[in-house]
Length: 190
Image (cartoon, rainbow, N blue to C red):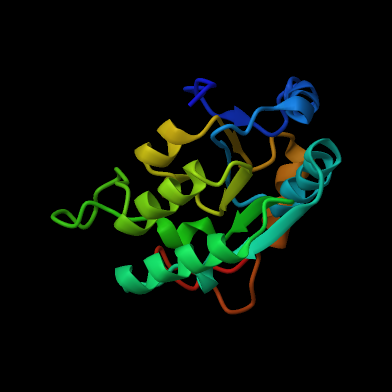
């Protein structure tokens, strides 16, 4: 990897984000460039992605739920088929990256995420792809140490910082049916 991954994630409202997006115009993707987006704040991700596309060109939007399955072998076939059929003309934006997350299975309530075989296989495919790849996670905790280590940058899209934005964000999360539990493995909505 030519560029060293940054150790600390950056918040989407950081004042250096516009400079970072501008620096991506000439970024080297040899052998690859991996950007992680993590957090539930979708209203901030949408404008970020538009600005990103202005810098790096159009992104191919791909739902990982159609590629990753609980069956490892099937996932490997799906990943191979996807990268074999995908040309190198566009950078790729994978959303619903939470399907890649795993926990240490000997202790169910572990807070530490470990790379699943599916995520390691996807990372190997990304490394040989030669383009920019963006992985989007709804849950910040779904980003395991291997993904974080292999990424060039991680941008966090967490709760808004200002009081007014927090209020709007919380009102948007109110449901009539009570609390919605997100599935930690599959079925995570976009």
